[in-house]
Figure 1 (cartoon, rainbow, N blue to C red):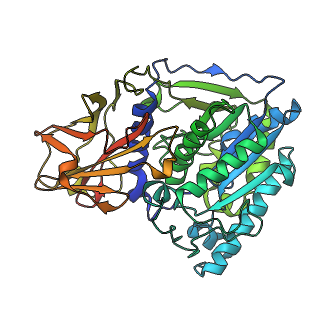
Figure 2 (spheres, rainbow, N blue to C red):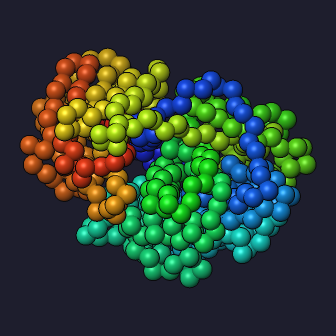
Length: 453
């Protein structure tokens, strides 16, 4: 778990984007808000993928205890060392921690906390593995750092490669293909039947990135394994409620995600206590945000993914998928003037028309001249490395249009745009996207540099 209060407003809208990304990619579920019980089998092998140390306990502390009690193999893999949370480190150290070497040392402390928490849950140090990618940087890697682009530079540790000697692959460059390679190594070595991973609707960028990277890794390994994917939610506005320690309560899905298919794991009272004890082993985070963390120590744990849409025999892609956003929430970080100008995305539709992929967006009200929209499209093919596939970003304003491929500007003739006061349609040729079989897609509106939905 990681919250950077100073930067939250800069990335929280991508959380809504990620929810739409997967809603469009995989198709929104249609089941009601009621959850069904999660079931374990004697043949299960449980892999928990966590963006940061403490996410494994927050989301799966009860699941891990049950797997241990059933003598099922369990592995926990951490995407990062959680080394970018300078505010929690300041509380822990009682002074600001800003030197790169000191930040890396804090990453090792969080590594030790994760091992201690795993032992409380019944695991050993051999059951945990760390990949060591940059905390608060993995979504940047996902969007831009592939192929011939340079490795991402970590904001605080100033590293461009995995610096930790106890990581899975020390020295791995901070690039997208490297993340996928390491996830595939973990998957192949452990061969899970159930993969618990952060949810794409989460508002933390590392949580979103881990889901997206995991999807690519699993698609690449589809002929070798097809585990159940069980995403969990941690960062979401006004959820869970009420905040604080309420161990007798159960969590329900957020209302805005109630249409998805949810499964619930129920924790007996002794396991709720063990989960709390394990969470407290993450001392750097518990001292900083105990009330928030305690909100997840309840009688159940929730998991949800999206249903796969039917595919077109001609293109191999879903012919049409749609995400409907009910009552776009106004970000709390906006000023009064910005909130008055707020425009949300109410409906997002993606479909193939002729030889192009078309994105249609309906806004909550007419767009002003100051409002812009960014649409991101990334294709996937099983016969081509994902790192080699185009990754297109289309930025549309009242008087301008820009098209980028992994941060490099492209010719405007690659897309066509139709715009009215409340609607926007962007068409991108399938050839420009690399003739994909699947597409990651999403959009967000912004007022100047302030993201809105």
